[in-house]
Length: 495
Image: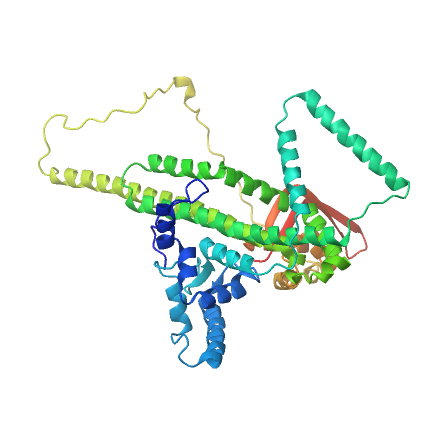
């Protein structure tokens, strides 16, 4: 498994690409070690097939070892029995060792089975190997337009002169009005097949790069969590100073350019309207004949859900940091309470030691923390107790012809059936709201069943409540009355 203290790798840029930097990268960087390894074809092809292509973030050791055994069996059938003689588990542990660090081996909370994930360096090496292949289509126009658009956004976003901003806005308005007039006249400009292919190729490449960036963001947050654990293990001073140091570093990451960009991306993608818009746009673009000729990957149709899943992994890593701080505070409170009890027991032992021969005079003095003042008018007045008069009455027989239908009209909400309905809906989607669940299966037991759904949302770890959006649900009572309720949006997600 990777050690707690990973080596600091030099950062190579265009200005620092000298001999010493490259030599250090060749010896220390996991991506360069992967490219130099004799088993690089096996490692890169296998990890690309099981992690990168299906966008799997984490795999259990049993599942990953089984897939690797099948790959090794096929290679031994083709190239001889002596090819890659070790077992799949040995290869996985070797790839996760400190001298390679191509995989990250860890134990998730609540599980005693090892799990594996790609390291950012390995994914970057695999992406570079993919880029070596012959590209089906190389476009330049869309990239130029993207660069031009970025420059325009930076220029407009940094313009402080109101008159200049108004001039740009009016110019854009005139261009839009002119385009509306041309469309109304029947002149509808369309992109040709080449332009459509070029822009889709750039979209597919950026979508894959974004998934790789999530793994690097998660790696940075995980490094912060590792440093926090090291500091807590070695800290012997006041807990306030440690918390200030840790929270300061966390705020530094959250307020950095990378942290702000990730938070803005997450807020943008968590909008339900944005998700629906992305789904509609992807469905329409993938049905275009020029795009279909490129034979795009079918997983691009749900790439925004892959972004959500990757972002949730990064969010869980941040949650681990909060849990570690909470555990540190609980441990410190226990140690402080234990210290107080030790002091009290010491006082009791000293008192018992002088019980038979107490010292003369005042041998102990304790100052009060505040003066004790008791005014006469603050004393409570005497209130005589009220005696209760108890009378015994003879019990008489009740009416036998009472209506007992109320005893048999009770019902019980089957929460297990509601949970099965939620799981069945999440088999086809990664997220589903409570309002959508009730559209597919209306309420049969009224408000009690709605409360049971809310109870399930509080129990399931993947459920969230969005207070900024309200949903309206409707149902019909047993006597035919129509009821409705408004509540914050409840979202059930896959865990």
